[in-house]
Image (tube, rainbow, N blue to C red; front, side):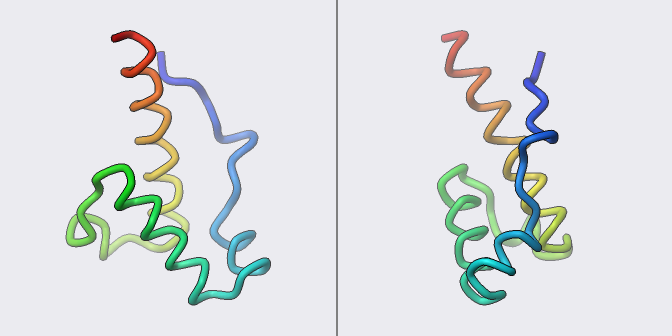
Length: 68
């Protein structure tokens, strides 16, 4: 079972409001790179969808790491 992080997740707009759009997109890309997400696979998604995707993958990876 993958933990539900949606209730405590931040949204891209939160990052954008706090750090500006350019910096928010750099933060997002850094998270994606850390999780091994290829930019080509997410370039057609909105920033919000990309952030949700990276959080989902982070949760899956945490679950996998705690099992092994």
